[in-house]
Length: 217
Length: 276
Image (cartoon, rainbow over all chains, first blue to last red; front, side, top):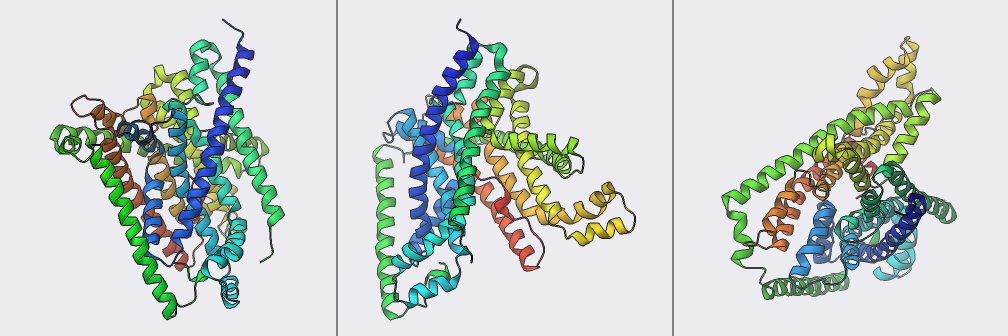
């Protein structure tokens, strides 16, 4: 039986590297999908709006565990999404988080002063241009705090992947407990500390970013 | 459509919107058709996949599972409200001895993944607690900590004059809190509390992972049965059940929030609830 502490450090490192990869990949994908959805939800084309709204209502109200069941067991059974457990976890986390990203962006767009849009339109910008050059940059500033909470929630939600075949940080708790049942408290606190650091980094970055891009309105 | 982004459309813009509507409508119809075709091709739209949900014993199994899930969620929320009230008052206390431990507890349980908490409770105390209480206590600690912050915001949203008036007629701190601040704060917090109930109900599904009683565990028993073998159909039915319940709750929260805003009341909005 190896020593506990070096083993703890080893497995925490392994686990959190996977957690961070999950977080980064699903964060990127969710941001991309969520941005497209937000653009749909504010577009003048009724079917796109309806699609965006339904997407948000469906994925925001489904438990993440059920999405994991569909992505890990359901879809592969019909020949879709047959990659690794890791890629299935990324798929489930991304489509789930995208709904929250979309809602943060939309509420951000709603905080932009109508005068800004009117000015952009009056100098002849098209819908796409006013959205890209005038509305979205301002909306992004307003959405930094809610978006940070979305990414924090995502960081914590990556833990669900541990129950679906991905050896990330939370999985390491049962893994460590199998070999060192007497050290459960330390294992728990060690893993908890890792998540606390991730959460602190995200919210710290968001605070710094918010101060840097803050504009008087 | 956000009025911020558009002028009133003229004839050309209206024509473009019509074209866009037709193109987008066709594209979405094609997408739907493609998804249905893939499902058809993989033999997912067959009586064997979907008929089980009409069998009385399956309906009863799902119904009982749903009752288990709702029970766990209800017990967890009730405990979380008590936990939240306790730690919110601790965090609002004038005594550092009470304030600092409350801050540490609230921030710790908000930062740690709920599943890690549930795993820990299950692995460490699963014997005496059982899966149900490991799940419920985990939900209580997490949702209670989020609710504590909602309660604190609610108390702080009551105008200062209210508590000052209370002190002026000679009330003690506990009386001001109990008789003046809390009753007024409760109404303003209602939308946020209902939103948090949606979060708690969704998280109750995590109990599946440790084998706690609930609808997801019962649903798994359907699709692993060789005569059914329909995981995708089961997943879709599960999702639909949760969506119906949670969507109704979310609509109620949004309705209460907008009504209270119209009445010009202080309100802790639904965004105060936890994301995801």
